[in-house]
Length: 305
Length: 243
Image 1: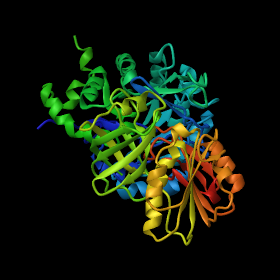
Image 2: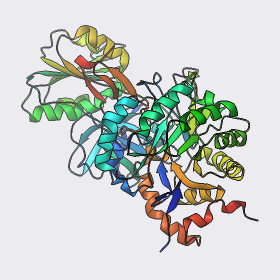
Image 3: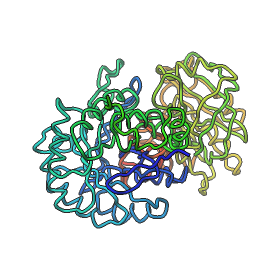
C-alpha cells in the first residue's frame, strides 16, 4: 500500500490533489457528479469583499493545449459566500476548504480575510495577488515584492489560519516575490496563476475575448509552472502548492518532484468534470509504477544531486 | 448530466454547410428539448457544445453547421468512431404551460432544438406551428422532417430564393399563436422581440468553458440577476431577459 498523504501547515490531506480556484465554483456542481470528499481539499472561487459580475462576454477562447479566460472574478461577494455557500458546502464537503480571496486594496484583502477567518469550514486562506483579468487589483499586487509583502502582512494580522499567497507568472523574478511573501509571514506559496495571453479572430480581425486579453491555462503552461515551482522551492522554506497544466497522476508526481507539497488542478476540471477523482484513483498505481512508497518522499526530489 | 463514450451511428451532410449526426449512448440524463451535449474532439482542448435535436432511449441526434476547425473535424467522423460526450446539459425549453398553439421560430442552426421541442409539444396534445428561416434556398434543411411530424411549417429565406422572402418575422403575418419558442442568431431575436405579442422562451448561445456551470465563462445578466447560459440556461423566459 502506497501512502498518498501529505501535510500542509500541520493538516494532513488524504492526497495532494486540490481543484484550483475558479475551476470548481464552491464545489456544488461537482458534488452533484461525485463525492468530492475524495479530494485532498479544494480552493473555492475567488471571493471579493463586494459582489462582482465580472467582465463582458465572450470571456473564453480556446488555444492549442489550453484556454484563455477573462472571467474577471465573478463572485457573489464574501457576505453571501459566508451566509449561503459555506452552509451549503457543509452538506457535501466535510474537510477544511481553501478560501481563495482577491481584492482591490490592501484593506479590502484584509477585511475579506478577516470575515473568512471566523468560518470553521475554512482551513487555509489563499490570497490571490495574481488575477490578470481585473484592472487596479489582483495582479497589480503580485508583480512587486513590496506590494505582495504588504498584502501578506495585512492578511496575517487579521487571521490565525495559514495564509498562502497565490502568485502570478507574469513577472520577471518570481523568486523575489515569493521570498518577500515568506518574509512577511506567508505560510505557503501557491503558483502559478494564468499567463496573460490573447487570441484574434481572423474573420472579425478582433480579439476573441471581449476584454481583449485573458489568462492562459491548460497543458500548454505546465513546463513554465514546473520551472517556477522548482525555482521557488529552492528559495523558500514554506510549502509550495504547485499548479499549472496538471491533468494526470503523472503530472502530480512531476509537480511534486519540482517541489510542490500539494498540487492544484485547474483547467482540466472544465474539460473533464471527473478529472480530480480520476487522478486520485490513478495516483497509487502511478506511484507504484515509479517506485514511490510515500508521496512526501519525493517533494523536491528533482533538486537532489 | 452524464459523461459517456458515444458511438457515431451516422453522420451526413444535409446540404453544403449543415450536417446531421446520430450518436448511440446513454440518454438517461436528457430531461427536456433545448438541452445540449458537449463533445470532446481529438486535438482540441475545450469541448464543443451542440444542442440536441432529438433523442430516444439509446441514441441522440445533433444538427450542426461547419463553421470552424472543430466542426470540420466533426464533419469527418465516420460511423463506428467513438466520442467522449457530456450529455443532458443545461435547462431546456419548459413545455408544461397552458398554451395551446405555440409557435416555433428557428433560424439556421437554431432550428435543431425546435425539432425535439415540436415532438414534445405534439405529445402533449398541443398544436405547434413552425417558421424556419434560412439565408438562402441551398441552406434549407429539416423542413420536411418538421412537416412529417404533422405541423404547419413556413419557410423564409433572406434572399427570397425559397418560401417567403425575408426574415422569420416577415413570415409571422396571419399566424395564430398564443406562445412562442425560439432559437437562432441575436439579430433575429431583436426582430422577434419587436414583433411578438405573447410570452415565450429564447435559447441563448455563448462561448463556454466547461458547459456545466463551473467556470462562469458564459454568464449573462437577467432581471433575476446573473445567470450561467450553460447551467441556468440556455433557455430563458422572455420576461427575465435584459435586451
